[in-house]
Length: 404
Image 1 (tube, one colour):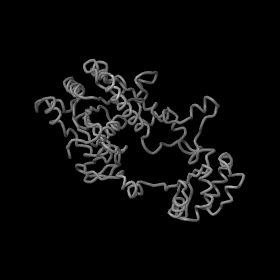
Image 2: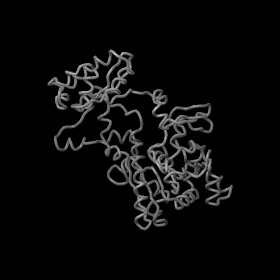
Image 3: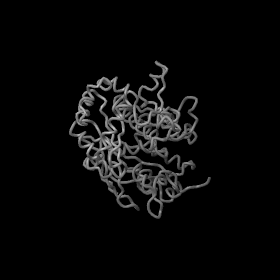
Image 4: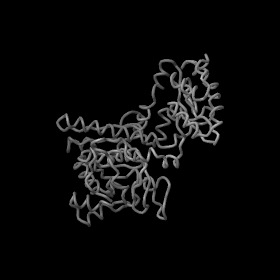
């Protein structure tokens, strides 16, 4: 793997990542992409559960998710059930700028790694704590994955069609949102630290609250009007036309022409300019009232042509539209390739692995993917030996699993 110094904006920042699964590690991935040194502490033997999640490849059963979520990180194994291993972890943390953890609240305290104690030892330390429901409140003791938080925060209730039970979004969106908000909090805390005499702080990120934060005006609408949004499938009631439409070759296209000017252009592209003069469709409010009827008219037109023909017409007319891409189409998309958002990275034991690129794109200090997720304990000698000055025997003892 390429261990040349990172040119990213965070190349001067050291981070220790404790935890597993998605929310905390995704935060670590985002910051590592921007150049931060992220030391991931994993349990010996199995390591992070993400090493086994997702689709498997190769006879060793290597996960194709691990190379993505652990990219640009250094892997150290410590059995935190051992007091000596916890002391080693403490030394790593106190040598860092940031600690990311996503254990159930109280776990760090039980291990003698309470954030308050860590900050007394190093006041500049920034600690981001990610949990299902936060560090305080009646639900703080509850464990939970993103799916539980998504349901509790109201997202699942709004997902899908009204005549069916609510499905999952398709990805672990709650966990990813928590990781994103954790990264935002860390960046804000780093700025605050630079302006407050090098003082760190504790960031409390709840997965449920991360979902709540992106729920638009759902709760304002309910409290002020008594109306509660429900599942509406592929439409947003009252906003038309903005829907999925069938095509002659069986593919779906999404057309969003809900503004007056856009609808004028859509009607002209359809060869039906008089639609824009029809009292049922002439204004935003009228189109919303006659949404189903308008969708039927548009669908009858789109299903007579192929998806490519429809999208070509929409692009020429300046009407927002796009295909409903699956993974194959996204990976083949020339725009995403040109933007380096679909890239290939060599991963040990897997060969070239295709993955998402770095977001956001900075002009002067861009992030990068320097290596894929490393093998378990790949950096024990470098970090535990080189930095903590542990002997080979000590490294072997502390980084080996025990049932004690």
